[in-house]
Length: 104
Image 1 (cartoon, rainbow, N blue to C red):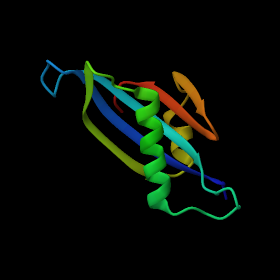
Image 2: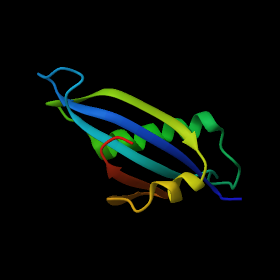
Image 3: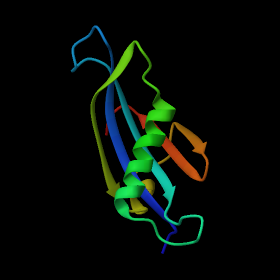
């Protein structure tokens, strides 16, 4: 069993002056450490919350862009293999973020 939790995320980033349906698609998978500093398993709600905060840090929509639509859900490790090679991989602390082109 993996010591990591996996979350898939999709969103649309749009300019503040454009319609919500227009914009750049974001699709990524977050691999996050399930254990805290004491080696105990963290609750799913904490992991999902941390994954969302990491995404905001990496995506950082800024003052001229906003996240129009977004969704995050827990997946299993097999989903990483199903998605294939990522376009970009970012490492933030002990977490990895695998970015794919557009929306799934």
